[in-house]
Image (cartoon, rainbow, N blue to C red; front, side, top):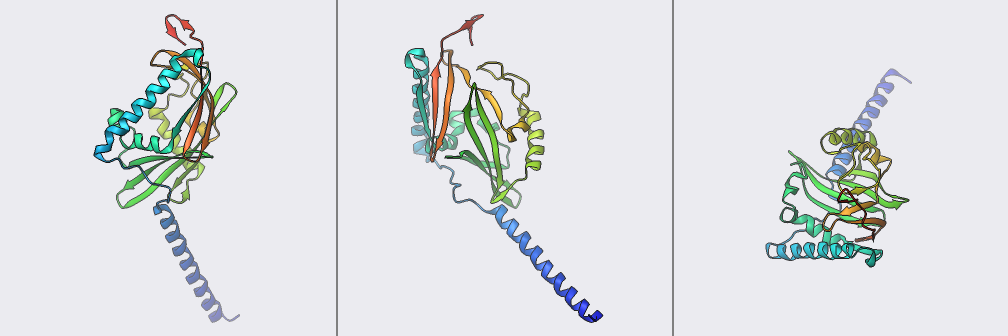
Length: 247
């Protein structure tokens, strides 16, 4: 082939490559900026705030009563709906004043989605001109003597975040909020909190705890998800007192 033809074809190839790169970048940008259809944070009107607060107080009271009945209550199922949880999250500052510190400034409007795969936690990420929905899909279930938790996926808009980036972020974040190697307040059993980065492979947490209101020990026997709700099996345990403290 003559040099002029080589040059002509090379220009065409480079032009086509440039178009493909631009299309790829534009597609990536749109996917990052995309707001998923399932992302619908609850909005609570001012005259409905007290209704939501009452629902939270009632739910907590019913759970406390059942646990504090002790062994006489037997194992029971506790159900929470996605709508309930999202309503509580929407007025979280009314229920938990310290929740102001839960999220960094660039994250807002958190919500959860419950389906058969577990729980998806999402929030709106905003920084300068960038805006996207960041979400974490978490698998939760019970295994012998423990609750198993795994961070299955992290997405930004419509794009999955690579595990290497998640690992680096978890490692940095854990230094501030994750007491690895320590036991958690209220837990029963020998489990110590593993490194936060292990959540990508899955970690085991205690299945037995002490309910603070009444110092009632209990065990989590099951955690199952359905679209829009979670079912939690709970079993009150015998009260064992060591040095005056229920364990």
